[in-house]
Image (cartoon, rainbow, N blue to C red; front, side, top):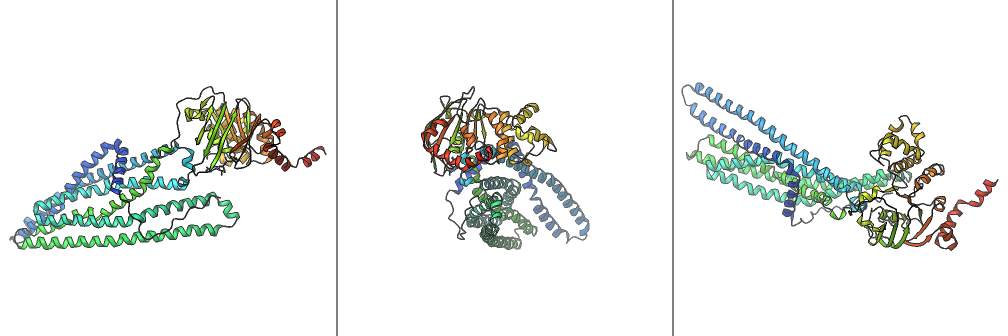
Length: 615
Ligand code: ADP
């Protein structure tokens, strides 16, 4: 059963804020600009539209001022209706033209902004998948990259970064642009009113920043909860058989409930802080409006302004306040980006995790493998191999024998370069494995595991995974060699049937068919029959024998017949190679192999078996 995810303790005190957030934001923007480069044209177009939009946003204030002032004059005329109708015609036309223009500007601005966002989101997701595909096995087996956590980190990273772009480009930029234009107009009309508008900006800014800082720690905790929660759900799905058979549903449910409780408390705390600050900001804005009314009324009474200027400045002030009212959203987005983008870019930048790549292409391999004083520790520190030296000879079958946990699979992991030795060398045909191109090396190696992964898809697709360009005939020939052709034909849709419907034994044969299709000169078989029953094991024996023919084969097995079939044996115990030689020689040696072999044959109850067979 997968180990339960660690609980993130709830700490209602916000954790201290990191000092270099500005730097971090800068580096995030720099990284984003790499991704944004292909869309430079779209960015420029969006900016031009934004500037145009910022001018049309001021039209209402001018129109209202003009209307009020003109009306004030008109009402005192003997026939106010004649002039009034002219005025209404004029302002309706101006507003209509402005709105029509606005439709195009807003549409273009949003559409191009959205295109940038969608394309960026696609590119970020693609890039991260391409990167992780190039990473070493150690990246996937490390605790922090457990599948649920990794997925959450990628999803949240991509969504927070693209939302940052969307918020900035689609929502905020037009507001900011119109705020700046409004401020300039206010200053131009009257210095003091302009000052009121300007003073509000830094006050809002400080409040928004304080709000964001208070929330930062809680958001980081939230990320921890989300990752842990999805890890927990995945662990439930993975371990459902064990959970159900031990009737541990309540315990799993409690674990989930504990995280939920912490999450809810954290979420409520985030909301309450946000509401408190938002109320404060509304208050500040209203004070701004009141001050502007008082100030403009003062100037009107003084004769320095017309009545229309009161509305004019209130509308302009609202233009100024609109983006800063939303400032916390940008802050939230930036904080989200800071919280999640770091984890996301960490995945992208994990250069250590990239598989080492030699330059030598593998061609015409003989298959002589030599391990010299190999030591290896897993990333968690567990030393699995200690000073291991032995030879694997070409076109022979070498069996790795030993108890569970001795280090046999680890040896195979090193031979396929899933991991690199901590020290010592592994040579293939006299050349260090490191020098070979990993890709071309793996093209020459076939790996059959205890549980071969069958992808959801058709049987044909699954076999073709061994050689993507194989013809139907080649694929069928491979299935025949793996003795599974007849059974596939017996299925309702033949080779087009869903591969996941196959039984364990059949799936193993599909894996062997894949291997026949790949036809590599070197084959590693890691307990290929361990998950099969005796009948299935017997049935695939023939295919296994066929696959072993004329190849360099390394087999890890607890199956006595597969062990005695091997030409050479390597006995592994607690990370050490303790014996090498043929079955006969090692048995005669009365060492570890003798002990394991006797234990295996005793477990078979050979006396009883032979009695039964004789009878
Ligand atoms: P065998 O194949 O002989 O049963 P393994 O090679 O799988 O043994 O394991 C050797 C040792 O390495 C064991 O102690 C095992 O717990 C440890 N080990 C195996 N895989 C990992 C891993 N991914 N991370 C950490 N330790 C591991």
